[in-house]
Amino acid sequence: MRNMAGSRRDYSLTTILLLFGIVMFFVDGCARIPLSYLPSSVNKVSGSVSISNFKYLPAETGEVQPFQIRNTALGKLKFDKNIDIYFRESVSMELRFAGVVGLDNKTRVLNGEIEDLMVDDLSYNADWTLRVHYLIKDLQTGDIVYSSTKITQCKASKLMNVNSALNDIIKLNIEELMKDEAFIKAIH
Image 1: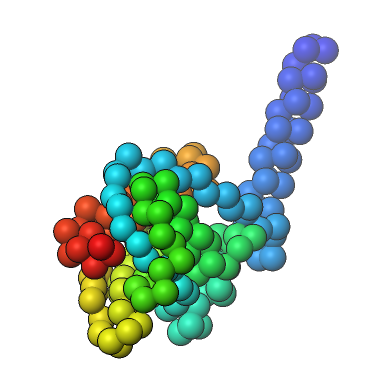
Image 2: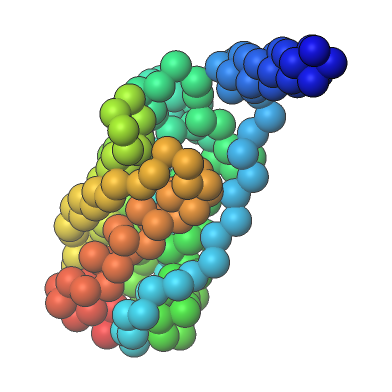
């Protein structure tokens, strides 16, 4: 009988801890998820371009806070950095890692708009979507020399680290940019 009482007590403690975890997950205002990006693309490109700001449209329209991404679950994904700043830093790191040496170009400037960043996590998997409109402007002429929207999607396990899943979708989107012949032409 003593073992059954101990098992019952362990089960109750496990249940309490599980419920506490679930409640903490859904409480608004929880600690923000720390972000760190490490470039990992195998693409190689050369050229020169400065990187300016990216607008995060879902935050500008009031759908989310600047440090949040849209998701379908009840909880809110909040990060320790604003999405626009984190994305700009990620683009800069990936381009440098890929071989773009002149990230201080005074005539060609890359910027754009993050049109959508969302995770649909109501199903079995977490389905990530990122849509970014990239622009390169020639500052001497004022002409737009590159304009393209890249949409990337991927499935991730719900158990996957959120930072890793976010980094994967960002890397995939930047890789689409680096594969674009028009982009490569614009930075040469």
